[in-house]
Image (cartoon, rainbow, N blue to C red; front, side, top):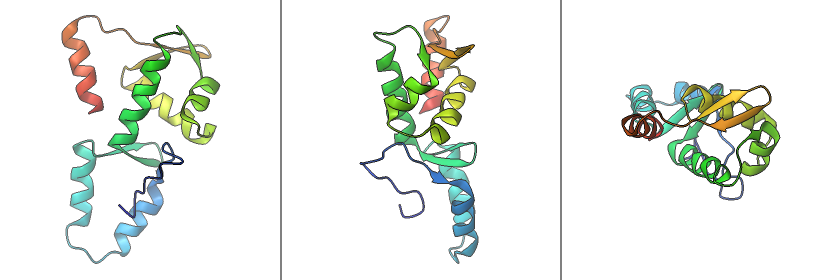
Length: 130
């Protein structure tokens, strides 16, 4: 809780990966590194470049992203940043993370919601985010 805090007033600000790793190194808790790896493997914590998000933050961001596309066809990086109420520093890697996982697809300066080819692919994509 303390190492990867969640602030409701800034819900899409992640923890710095370097700070998290340094905190674990200084800790004398046996098995902490393995516990961290397990949390990442299960999606409770999510590594996005140099940042650590809680899985709940990622799901909230994806819900907002999908909500945006109910009325819009394309999204710019600035629109994504504003949608999350965060800075470009966090929005760029997060949207690239969604691109890499097949949630969005980039075309020039815009993103679109990637449409699954079949229902089975939709459930696999959803499971990757969980």
